[in-house]
Length: 455
View 1 (cartoon, rainbow, N blue to C red):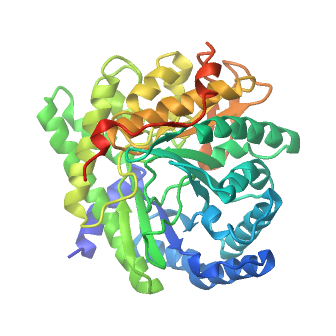
View 2: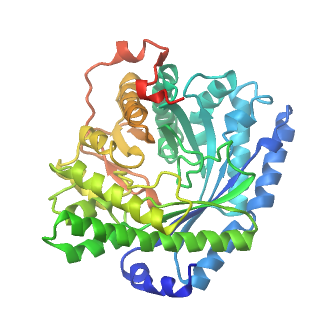
């Protein structure tokens, strides 16, 4: 039983160490909104989301005030829209109309982001999937809080290389259209996945999976600053001491998330889904995953030993979290976005962190190549090749991996890209420009690995 004394124990964490509940995300099924008429479909979508989520922000603020726990974001995720719009949408413009409906109702509810402008194409694309994917550049540059994701592969199905090649073009087109319209680079709101989970509360990759209930509340906790502070007392200690310290700290952080999730469930009248215990950094000083790695003894994130340190951190966070909550899900690990983590930014600027090292690090942590700013003249096929590499790591290692690559038109290596807010800023990182054109243009599907066959 979680009680107020456990909350009191975290006061210092909240006041001095940047502990927060990063998000309450309400997952809403739109399967009962499907209609063959685009206008009726949009009306159904708007009405259901507003009916379910109209009190989400107010409730989150009340819980935060009552318990003294910062709840940074309140968000909505919905059923992948490619599935919902299939019978009504005959053109990409029809999907963009749904995108604007989602953006409008999200703003009406007051949430920070709405995720689920998504398609699941790990084995093949339906005409509806392809229409939605081709609509992404316009959808993300014509909206403010809408987020998009595409699942391109899985351990069970392999990698859909036709979709990977298409996404290489879509990412480039989204960046260029954003520059033309002078809006936030839409690629910051677009994630491509392998093995995407159905219950991820974190943006930009959140969607409400078809295996989920009608309405579910998922909570994402964070606390890189708390872990770093705990490790400051472990200078010179062995790895067993280090591991135990991380595990115990993760337990306390996750208990706070569990309490918030249960309270939100009680007040809103919808079931609690999962706690995602990912260490999600922000640009704030002292709220950095990279700083944890440095506290372990690395000069910079990216130095030799980084992958081993990150593997241990991720594993102990999961062990502590699993003891604290019966329902852990989502991504649950350490995020390593470059733009959202001041320590990662510093490492990239110092030359300690490269795209290749980040790729190696994603073998042992959550997500993947996240919020990576790259030169605007990077070729579509190069972007597709980077995506394919990241999808392969997820497929072979039976884990979730993802890419959020952000080409920045007009910018070159060494320049800086500003995104603002929680998205922060990032140095433009160099990309391996040796050609992979012939490889990514082959088409078809990379088969699933042999260990995928478990029936």
